[in-house]
Length: 564
Image (cartoon, rainbow, N blue to C red):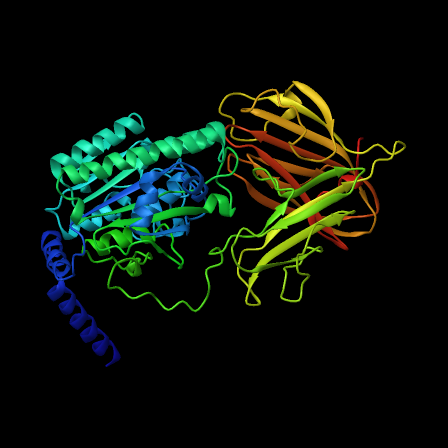
């Protein structure tokens, strides 16, 4: 009897499935009919993605076009990309409505069907369904275009869903192609990718004059694209989304700092509220969701992104139970850090003077000197503080007694030299083959140069060249109390740390500044410490940390280091 009931249930389910089955063509037609019932808030949407454009670039470069778009539109300089902060992972999120854990793109070497993590949902051709496919499936008669400077962008979607697909040789040609296409075809949706700002970040460094100049040029190119919409007669029916894939620190990106993760997000055009600073969390995968919503397309269930509805006139703002963490700028602890180097610094045979600036027009700053997160009961900053020993500083903005910013941090290292007890470590540099992606076997290489430094860092190391280079640091680490000691290496590119002949931390590989950790049970006394580091290209940084009994996590104390 149970088998008969089960068989009847299966037959009913099969009949229901057959009744609901339709051919791909009819499915698309049904989707188009359903989408047609959704209100269309704009007839045209143009996304302009500027690779490597940071909020700092928007704030400090000459950007009259972006300034006008922000004054007449809605914007956030605290939107976030996804981790890792590499280009392909973030562009895939910007067209796919999800993060890397769903679309599977985690490196710039990704190719459909070849690497690692499979997509959670498969659209056409093995790709996660992009906004190009979503619009084509629901509105196959719409004109849809993709024009990109970086060829890697073209690896991220099925090109059959794009009516016009072009890879410009540089930012000028890419913009010219977009201008001509807009005038000729008046597309319903267009994605434009510009890559030259990222090039400037890698070549000259974020925050440099040449980086800001590249941002100014991007602003000029965006003005040309907007003007093309005006000349095509569609400007009044168009919404622009200007955003980026990641920021950067120094000459690199790929790490997990806010400077790398935060991106600008600007909405401008038909129906957008004027001069609205968006005080809500925005992620890069909200971008395609917003574009599809503006065009009246149905969002697929597989997408996790949400339309930023409150940016449009007549749309209510969401009820925000919790305050965005980066709405207010963090306090600035001085001496300020450069690039990935934290604020504070190394001071030899002298004390340091710490000052804290509040970059906000409101609030007060409270701080701690033991590495703890400040609370309303922590000391109120009222003037310079003298630092006479190794100190971990945290500082937070408070408004109405509540924390209102991401805590700022600083590390002060006070090194007391004694002529009878030499301090520091020795280092050797090595030249590597072009395109190196891992640490080499150093026993097969001859050093290019050698020297000494007080800390395991690159700050005082004289590198023979910037790219395809490696450094090996060696010295003795003094341990006073027995126990478990944790070591962390944060580096761009790869690194390893050894205690004695044991590998404690392995952070090898070609990557931005990411951290890896390991631990060792150490007895009191001197222990051989060795750190290997390499840079294949782009950004370069190394930070070596430790913590143990009575020692909070900090840079390895230079007072505990001595040459072999």
